Structure formats: C-alpha cells, structure tokens
Image 1 (cartoon, rainbow, N blue to C red):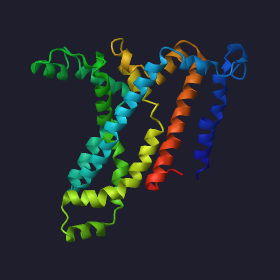
Image 2 (image 1 turned 90 degrees about the horizontal axis):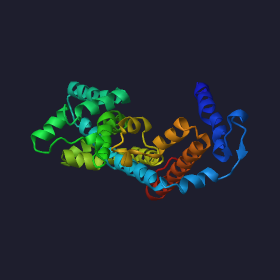
Image 3 (image 1 turned 90 degrees about the vertical axis):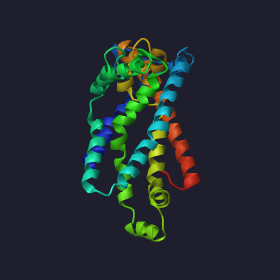
Image 4 (image 1 turned 30 degrees about the vertical axis):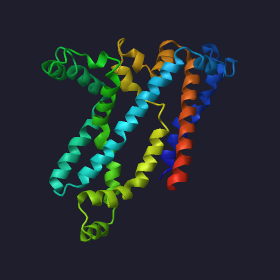
Length: 285
C-alpha cells in the first residue's frame, strides 16, 4: 500500500538530486545536465561575497522568524479556544469558517490585499484616512511589508494548522477532565494543567519542523507582493534564486544558492532536534 508513495518520493525527490552537481559546474546548454566545466565552490563563494548576501539573509531571517514567532502560537491558541466550545453545531460552524481561508489561491489572496489595502480605494485605506493617519500604502512601505505579510499569513493558515492540535486534544483522556473538575479546577487551570501538557509533544515536533525550513520563506506570496518600493525588505533568497536562475539563465549560480539554502535548513533541523531531545526527550529521531 505504501509502495506508490515510496516510488513518488524516489522519482520526484531523490532522482532530481542528481542535478545538485550543477552548483559545482559551469553549466553549458550544449553539454546537457552532466556537462560543463567543474568549478568547485566558485558560485558559493560568489554568493557569500556578493553585496546582496547580507540583505538577503537579513530579510529572509527577519520574515521567517517573525512568521514563526507570531504564527506558530496562533493555531495552538485557536485550538484551545475551539476545544472549549461545548455546542457541537457552533463548534463545527467556527471550524469550517476558520478553515476556509486556507483554500484561497495565493494569487487571489494577494489580489484581495491590494484591493483592501489600497490607500485611495481600499476599505483599510479609507479607515486609516478617517482616523487621521492619511493615505498610507501599506504594501509599498518597507516598514509595513512584514506586518502585512505575517498577519495575512496567520489569517489564511491559522485554522488549517490548528487541526493537528485539535486532533491531539481529542485524544486526551476524559477522566483527566473529570478529575480536574472534582479537584475544583476552573477552565484556565484545566487548559494549563491538562490540555497544554497533552499537546506539548505535538508542539515540539512541529516547532522542529518549522525551524528546519526557517530559511525557506514562501516564494509565491512574497514574489506577488513585491514592488519597487518594498523591494529592499521583500527580496529574499527564494525570489533572488528565481530571478537569477529563471529570468537571468544563471542556472549554476542559482543551484549553488539553493543548495546553500538547503544546507542551512538541514543544519538547523539537526541542531533544534538535538536541543529538543536533550531538554524535553522529544525529537524526530
């Protein structure tokens, strides 16, 4: 039963890894993917010594860390709140409502942001003008780009990401709730002493996985939200790789940057997993 899934992983994830050699070659169209002069770490050094390296790393880490700090606790809090609802009908309606944004196309979402945040015609723009803040283009400012990106990302995915925590809460032994109530625990004490300890393993595992992709910010949304005014803060490694590799045809340079990105993510995954294993005895392996 798992054979088709294993084959898909091998075909689409492992076999293409043969192309990693492009990061160490001077790619030549006429020689094919296995041809080209071997140049070693030339492109890695070129990227690290580039004047854009510091800005790209800063922007990528800033957006990723802000997304994790703000977005990671949000589904946990939402799951705990939903779990407190006793009326099943209201609970199902709320769950469906918060899940729906996850299925909105990224292009549609960015289009909605452009419409709503327009300084002249958007609802948010009119609201800001009415309270005396003036016509501020939130998508064109380097100071507001990250808050808009992070908050819209939380709004879109918080409901969907809460599903796994709700599943963990559903597995809590009902006798623990009964015991807590007999001991006189209020709702907050039940959350703190029964529910949160029950989902800590899930929280730790998901945190490890999120830290393992900290350098990989969402390409589509950032690229669609980019404009010349916010580019100093919105240019990240993945958008730069696209522009260098696809638009400028520098395939070897783009492959080297992508491999550099992957190695950092993998190293962080190993480090965070080791720390979690030493401190909480919970880890991926």
